[in-house]
Image: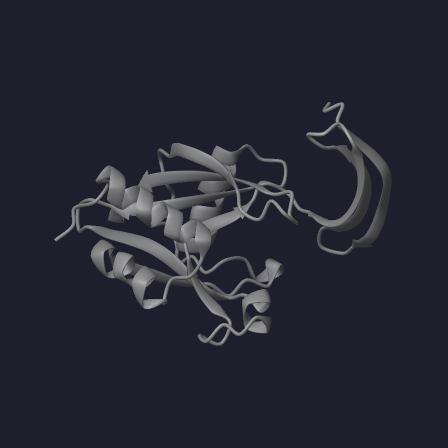
Length: 196
C-alpha cells in the first residue's frame, strides 16, 4: 500500500452493471502536505481486446456496434463504433476471455493469441485495465457468424477489412475507438501486415 494515500470514505453510489463509487481520500503531496480529494470512480472489470488479422489476404476483422455513451457525446455515426473484438474478463484469464470473445463476436475459433501489452484506458475515472492481444486467423477457423450473444443484448456486425483501408479510417474519423487505434498502430509499427 502507498503510505501517501489514505482512504477516508468509500461510498457506493450505484451497483447496476458495474459499481460507481465516491471516494474521499487524503494524499500527501511533494511538499509533504496532506490534501483531501474526492473522486467518483467507475469500478469495472478488467478486459481484453484483440486484433484478428490474416496475412493470407492482408485483412483484419473488426466489429461495429452501438455505443450509448458515444451517442450521448455527439458520435456522428449514430452512436455506432468500429472496434477490435473485446470483452470483460468476468473471472477468466485474459487469454481465455479473448478466445471466447473472438468466437462470440466474430465467429472465429482462434488457436494462438499473442499478448502485446496492457493499458489503463481512462485512468482518471475508470478502474479497468485492458490486456491487448493479436491473433492470426485463417478461413478454416470460422465456426459461426459471430454477432455477439442475444442474452447480453449484443448486436454486433462483423467487418472484414483490408488493413490499409482500416488504417486510413483512423485519419478519416471512421475509427475513433482508442483500443482499436492502438492495435492498428501496433500492427503498422511492427509489420504484422504488409502496407502498400
